[in-house]
Length: 368
Image 1: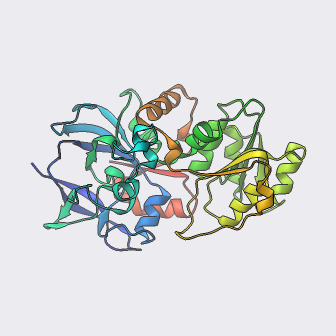
Image 2 (image 1 turned 120 degrees about the horizontal axis):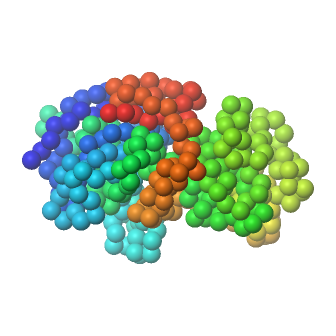
Image 3 (image 1 turned 90 degrees about the vertical axis):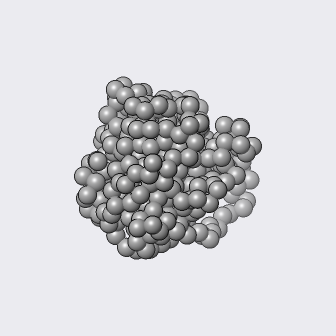
């Protein structure tokens, strides 16, 4: 039976989020209805809402949901009504990368998550006044009081952990943590540089602090965020508006350079500086996403010392194992996400957007 719920709808590119009654489709066999308790706001949501990506609008966004399962489709086996869940990206489950434990590189990832707006079979998950809306965003579209969620987006979590404290695990946090743990995998004594101290960058700093890396350098222009980075585990900070990055890293490392760099800003000039700051055999992980078609010039001879540049989506994580581990770290206080979060009533979503855009809140979390 279809469900009417309240959702934040983006009517067209550049338009604000407006609350509206929408109707969820009947759950398919591999879907569940989730009552949202909290949902993180991510720069990807803002990029789509601005019209920067070809997602069908009007539509319902949101991809860092957390809530309680209300009902499940006939083929759902991993969760049951009453379970607490974090919502993350979806994937086909059948391609080579899904079978290999890398669902973030699913062969159908883009249409299933970011630009399709519908199920894989082309059907709509949400409508208004009889007209289909863009939905199925990351398999969830969680800017709504209830969401129709793809089974592969559902991650069952410890019900003893407040859902508002772990909603950001679905995207931003697992991206920053995964960049360090799943790609860089720091060896003892490593130097890690994190470019940008937003939610993803600070998640990378916290992740690096839980590894054998001994030098963790956070880079940003905002003094308050650099101070927070030090409190979360950075051993050094660099003001991006001051000493050039390469000189600052060379001074800190005695001229050796960085073993790993996490680039979260989406600025191609910053990316280039990060590559130049790498030590021999160092790796830069590209996390920040500039506009489609952006290119960066590199010194080819500078790469011949074994430098690597690796693109990353969603931390290259296998969510069913990765997210519960992060939840446990939050529960134990070893991943202090609360230092990043500012909460807002769902009706104040536009204020949350403004505060995030202005840098007043690192990670807004909407409360339902």
